[in-house]
Image (cartoon, rainbow, N blue to C red; front, side, top):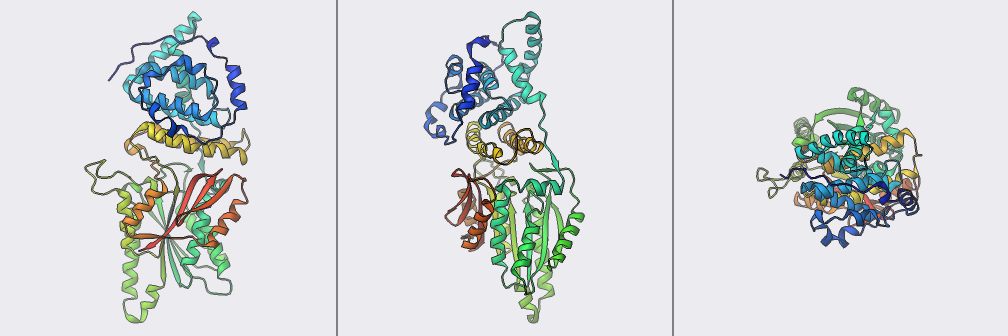
Length: 498
């Protein structure tokens, strides 16, 4: 491993007119087409040590998203190659052009800068740089010397090490209000509820297995929809099995008492004339939610025993089994045998095959439509940069600057960026896959997608009318996709055994 022993001097602050660049950045509002990932493939494959700081700091596109993406790519390459000089130079430039309180493009870049510094700080060589930078910076301050490499790292490291992310831990009431600020989760709730209502039509009972990162935030609306749909008729009895798994990522919770949550949902359902049974099952994505799947198998065996004689066969067949997966499946390990010889089959494929053995009436999958599975840091960085501009861009439409909720919202995004960029192995839990790859896994497990009906599409469009005009939806094959300014954000698909 190369040791970072060579320290080169940085130019004085006069080399770059920061006032001029700030004015330019405020004037240039990025339109995120992000074509650089394809256009500059050849340039990104070149050695990071070819980075020229003089060309960089005199560049007249400092506020452009494509330019910032390229800076981040060069920096990531330098860190992965243990190439000290360009890494330090780029960190200096990024630290000056991407303030944490700037426009959406600057805040996005600042989040990636922080993540790269944290990644670098986890290696022994980079810790040496940070330590020596701190001591050298003290000497420089005493001597009133010019800015050099040491102060660059110290200034940048303050972003990563001196400012902790304020990850807010929500109460259930806070979360209920928070998830309704944007369609990010509401889209999946709305699409899923619509197809579930159609799937349970004519059934006397429904068993819903809820695997969701928002801990039943979808269920009150579903209960209300069931009550409305069955006005004047007897609604089906609802059995709700909730996967109570340890929180992997935002939104975080301070504490959840599932007993209290169950009581609240049961009382709410009763007020709507719906009979609800509630059970929370502790589980974890690390074993493919095995305890939840075992709970479903046990219930099916009990019902077969209870209704085993011909007189009760009708009751057995009339309970619909719905598996509702909301933003939770990307926490399953995605490693394939060719990537990890110790793996026979990826955890995700195993999960779908296990679901298929349960013969569910319907499986609903809602996930973010992006690929964070690459083992290559630069590949993940490009995917993440071309995706996470969306939440930074949308926040201006629903949360004012300086508000606590906005601080929580952007801290959650920064947490995800940090996890994608600075972590590896089991610590990297944000492992989203694109819609097409999920579809392939489902088909391999003998599921087929069923198109969302016109009613589902209308419900989604009605929900989106409550939000900013940049939000939209479209059909891709049999799935429905949430978009922001035409870019894919989240997809929802409904599956039945083929």
